[in-house]
Length: 275
Image (spheres, rainbow, N blue to C red):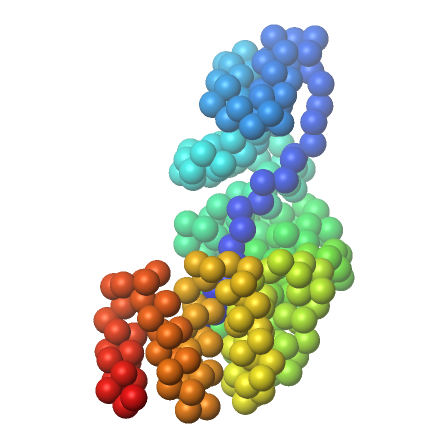
């Protein structure tokens, strides 16, 4: 079954500066405090106020975009990240965040250009490398994806998403043993990653290592009982081993989460007719 390529919006802090000697700075500092307190609407108001006082205040635009991305106002966030970059072309964090949002929006060409620029501005931006890795996967350029995710891992060896994405690229090249190794690394870093367990389940299933595959899908479900793909993958493992009753139970569990999936409903019907 198809695995998920995770595309995370980067919501890391862009760096805090105190400008409280000016009206724009005072509003900005209030916005940062509201953001840290998760008072997003208040933060949005303060950052807009800072921009009204100083229309070229790049960091205020970046923080406003950050708040807007958290509020799901993606188009506005993209616009404000672009404005921020216009006024500060050395801010790699702004470019990295913009890249993430463009990836999310499916604007692949623009995302690739912005990710590459982010790496040029800040060669240590492991998140920009990871974002570009995702774009390479979607473009079918798997060797390039592996190179970028590998670079992200060199910069930050604890970055789970880069291991998962590199594993996905390895799978596309039928290098399933390497994929399993990367999923295992991701799990060691984050034992609560249901995605890593599910994806390793798939790779092990293809390798016909059914015992660890079943264990991995079971672990993914234990971590996230709404993880529909894990039920589907474990059902396929049971079915391939002739465990029809167990497969039927998992297909039924999947359908509770995805009742609109007619193909799986037909599959379950056929299995029940075999019993």
